Image: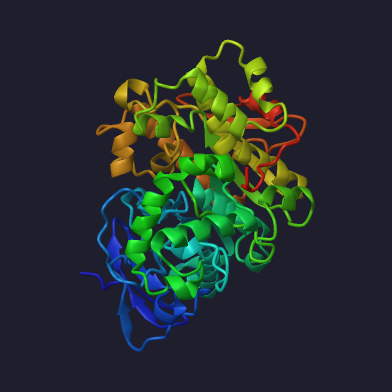
Length: 496
């Protein structure tokens, strides 16, 4: 029996295990547990240890603000996992994956992120846990803002210090994420403290979830009042159990619509406590920073699904029930002012309420932020490769369409994971397997060379890789929506 793999980090030696032809190291701390005096503080450097630390079990799950029952597992939340083809190798490309969803969850142990397929292709995969929800993003008067982003930077600093010990090249790091993970990537592109920590970026379904300090302060104050806290401060919240705090945020998010008149667009997201454009940690939104040349472009693979909002409408039971009143409210709240609502009706004259709701939600929440990030990155001197997933999920008679998050099990090759089977089925079709292979090969090529395999985005062409049963490179498919949003960037949420 071969000896289990070891790696010497700057904090101490870790011992992992061998699995499916590659080495896996789990639950490695990149910062101290953010509890006690360190709760709501910036991440503190990890402690060193003597001897060999076992790294075969995933670290504890961070407190999640989701309507699911996850029991507390400990407080050493700020850990990461490494899957590597060979710890003894050198110069391998590295993908650092940020598994954040809705700024409410971050579960590196999700089987959807199994690194086996990518490691087999020669990539070192790092998946991180970081603070989310109130722990990571409540805007507190006596604590640093955007602590979840600060955690991500601490993890990327750990990668720079240590990834060579796992066979990776610290000069060839790609940071990636989907949904709020992609929003995190977009923020990292523009944060001074993240400069030099990665070379390339992958962003699937970028959201525009950012708040102004004024709105964030008011929302956090309302949340603190709900908890019976004396003030929206770390001092007032520090003694509340983290998992109780997360559960209370779940309930608070469920009632956001009651605040529509004062909190406006934020109430449509289901995420009350999102990143804040605070002027320091996050100086401005990624789109304005890049287009204004206050951040440098990079090699960026970015895109979205065709039917982004369908997953949420089906899973909430709303699909097929949207009324003209729903369409009018969605257009008034989410279409770009001042004429966006009229422009949508003119661009889609045959669309009924259902199509209008799905189109404007898909555009405002994911499609336009993604497309505009490609444009902004190119304007800042970077190279952007744009894609749209148009392959229909085969489950439920195809009702999900090409929905949000469908691309993730395809890219990781984890079609048999719980999310993979939910969206693709128990027995993947040859079509699904072929598309999964194509997306994996795209990722591997990109993290290795910086080239996605199709022409880069240009202002005069908007060429896009349309991922389908037969993928093609075409002009951007959502031209009508792109034209409606011309000159409009995703703006931070503010008072209505």
